[in-house]
Length: 465
Image (cartoon, rainbow, N blue to C red; front, side, top):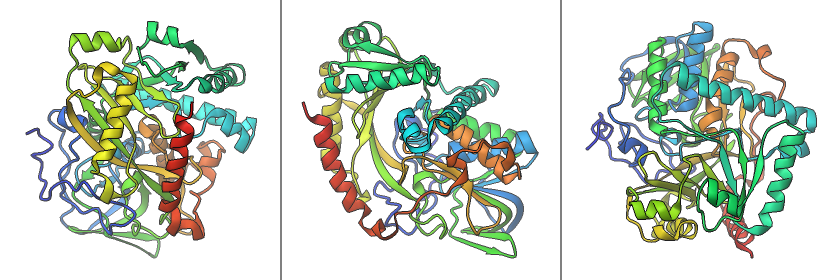
């Protein structure tokens, strides 16, 4: 049993937690049984749960990548020592359940879709923002010696069908000619010769920026840095009530009420709907499943012929994300169940196994060392927001990455720190900073019915000849 499963957990891991239907995420829970938790080693110290009423300057709700980055940058850039409140263990949610893939993106939309939505000037501003974000991400890891096993080498966006190749070629040309970014196309043969023998792949677009990391080691590195800079990180302290009185936020936890001048929310897909009225139903939690094989044999490695450990993503709408890990296991993930109650349905595991086997026939039926799932914070317009909460003084949030938060969360935390510190003028005039997450209004009760229908449609579209 590793150090994380031995932590002060007083409740078992709840595999069916659903942020749409459950009133509370609870506290004191064991971690999800992910590869990252199982191989992260001994965690750094935290500050334990809240045990009494406190008056503090700034509270950050959520101790994943975004929340810890916010605490780091509040201390580094503004001398503000935040108190981070976490419902369970540090980085309990998205930050220890993802695929460990850092890509040069901040949401689900491509550059061509940025132009379509906002025009070329804003699209170029967005590109500059994510480029700066990747530099910040790399800098945090390097400057603070975070031993998260970074595997640089770019990102391979792999065409799962031949009809996707012209679309990828068009996007690559746009990246080169309009954004000055060195994307290039690889044929199926070039991909097999230089990167990986994915038997489903028809070719790929390669982007220069892409890094694989150990998800939990990154999170716990951020934890170490935040505490070294003076932040306090309180585990097992969910916010069970939030009132604002005379400009002061009163955050009720099981151990006491924390009163704060400012609050920054970084809960991703894990906050219950009742956290605050201004956040209710602003994101759509989407479940993603992930598996990790046992260590591959020499024969299996030769058959798959991984020459890179870079992030690999296929072009399905319900995409697969996968890669060879440094210890010669293969990790792959994709979208799965719609509700928490259905999360452990064997059909979802079987579908993911089949996805792995289509790409790497030699791995059909391979034993698995880890299988898990988690909630992704998808915004209704597929882009995140880092912004103030309207009508709530000194309250901010960074949410809605849509599965692309491993890298951009570092910059989002920094941007939210700038907002908290009253430095909004230092933030670019971009839509993700100047508007709140959209709400679906009357459609809200029917979102999951719509999701079920869209999944059927996407599967049909993805798998046509």
